[in-house]
Image 1: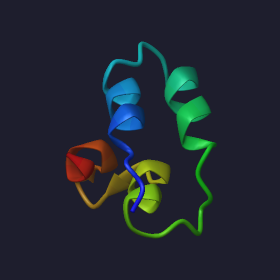
Image 2: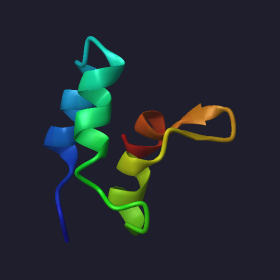
Image 3: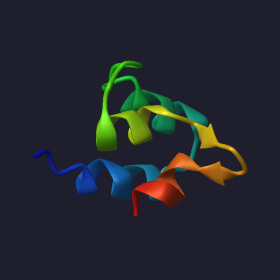
Length: 53
Protein backbone atom coordinates (compact mmCIF):
# COMPACT_ATOMS: atom_id res chain seq x y z
CA UNK A 1 0.00 0.00 0.00
CA UNK A 2 1.36 3.40 -0.97
CA UNK A 3 1.46 6.34 1.40
CA UNK A 4 0.38 9.54 -0.35
CA UNK A 5 0.25 11.70 2.77
CA UNK A 6 3.35 13.71 1.85
CA UNK A 7 1.88 14.61 -1.55
CA UNK A 8 -1.45 15.50 0.04
CA UNK A 9 0.40 17.87 2.39
CA UNK A 10 2.26 19.41 -0.56
CA UNK A 11 -1.07 20.03 -2.30
CA UNK A 12 -2.56 21.58 0.85
CA UNK A 13 0.41 23.92 1.18
CA UNK A 14 0.66 24.83 -2.51
CA UNK A 15 0.55 28.50 -3.36
CA UNK A 16 -0.32 28.16 -7.03
CA UNK A 17 -2.14 25.98 -9.52
CA UNK A 18 1.21 25.26 -11.16
CA UNK A 19 2.50 23.71 -7.94
CA UNK A 20 -0.62 21.56 -7.65
CA UNK A 21 -0.39 20.55 -11.31
CA UNK A 22 3.23 19.46 -10.94
CA UNK A 23 2.22 17.12 -8.10
CA UNK A 24 -0.85 15.79 -9.90
CA UNK A 25 1.16 15.04 -13.05
CA UNK A 26 3.09 12.41 -11.09
CA UNK A 27 -0.02 10.23 -11.10
CA UNK A 28 -1.63 8.49 -14.02
CA UNK A 29 -5.19 9.33 -14.99
CA UNK A 30 -5.79 5.59 -14.66
CA UNK A 31 -4.42 5.43 -11.12
CA UNK A 32 -6.56 3.55 -8.65
CA UNK A 33 -7.49 4.29 -5.06
CA UNK A 34 -5.46 7.09 -3.41
CA UNK A 35 -3.37 7.76 -6.52
CA UNK A 36 -6.56 8.38 -8.47
CA UNK A 37 -7.80 10.77 -5.83
CA UNK A 38 -4.60 12.80 -6.06
CA UNK A 39 -4.92 12.99 -9.84
CA UNK A 40 -8.53 14.16 -9.78
CA UNK A 41 -9.55 17.77 -9.41
CA UNK A 42 -13.10 17.61 -8.09
CA UNK A 43 -15.48 14.82 -7.35
CA UNK A 44 -18.95 16.31 -7.46
CA UNK A 45 -18.87 19.39 -5.27
CA UNK A 46 -16.00 18.11 -3.11
CA UNK A 47 -12.31 18.56 -3.86
CA UNK A 48 -10.20 15.45 -4.26
CA UNK A 49 -7.86 16.74 -1.55
CA UNK A 50 -10.73 16.80 0.95
CA UNK A 51 -11.64 13.23 0.08
CA UNK A 52 -8.07 12.03 0.49
CA UNK A 53 -7.73 13.21 4.10
